[in-house]
Length: 279
Length: 264
Image (cartoon, rainbow over the protein chains, first blue to last red):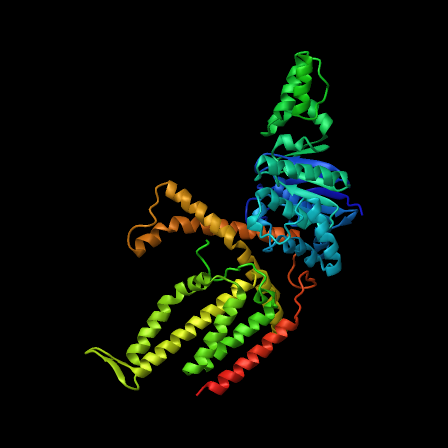
């Protein structure tokens, strides 16, 4: 099943009745996400990234504008509830999204909510635990897991619901380098299996792993480009308080100084290797 | 954290661990009534014999039971002293100008202390041999009929399960906050009780704030995983009675008969 998400002139305000109408968290956002895309939504703190993620998932209701899934407007509670099955969301703090006192029961939680039959759960749960590398830890209590393992458990809980789209809302920001590496690898793996990945982050290095980057600033979409296009003009990210990955910045500077390097590098290792060869 | 024994689950594979949590919960519930039927030395001896047997069957260290009694020791001692001083009857064993201890007072004091001890040990046995998840599942099923009178049984069981899930997390958080405040020179261990309570305010305020934030984030995460209450939910964990659970009923009935026969 494919899921095309469309945000049509979406505006969102946390307290539209009580506070100033100028404090919009999201302002007139128009975005379309096709099935199978790997998109990074990047922006500094308070740019509206997490609000946008919650709007896509149906956790927040747009103050103005529409959320359209496969051409259908999502307007009622039932529609938003059904959306949770298609669009899964992994949050920032792994500790605050694990509900049950054991790994197995936590993965089952979402399936129980959807009313999935027990026999089906018995098939799905071992499969997703193996996919995220938590097989053998079924009976473990969450507080005995590492930060990275907790986040993988949260991902397993969402994956068991078999969504087409996965939103990662700064899901790597509280992890150590090893844990972050595992989650980013898992994102790539899920993308290759056909899932849509929407990665919310303020880390430019992570954002450049996606095929498409959307820059948010003060609730507005400032830029929506594919990686290649943004790569050539990455310096503009600083306009919105974002860092340019050091490897990209160095590569661009060396090219500008006439070094004979490839026009695009994939990672730091490739850059080091090219500099080594050039020298 | 390891010093807190009440409510702790001790993983194991004893016959008590293998019993259905509903059977254990019901057994302990009715056993509490049975304790109050005991009224003479013979009946208390039967109860003690039974409790010692199941402690041995549970394969749990005796020291853990002693630690579980520790928090209620003060209440037991207080009740014992009250009975010794206030209960009259029988021969006067110890006479002072202020009070006299009678034979009946000693008897009642021993019986009441025994009641407390057996109650605490049985409650500890239940939690030592039953995981929190099994207990909440059992409670949800046993309280199921209350749904008809609109008691939110599923929500109550889930609240209990989440509370138990977050005890270690909140304990870690408390330790972190305490260390942070101690690093800033907070003095938590000196002064009278009121001074200590005031000193703990900078611990409680951030703890409450972070707990509310956690609760909000958890609610969003649950909603994102399609949670909308107990309606239409299925269950992954299924509880099933076995012959051991039926055997427990037989043991309980035998106990009732023996206590009934021996009591005065």
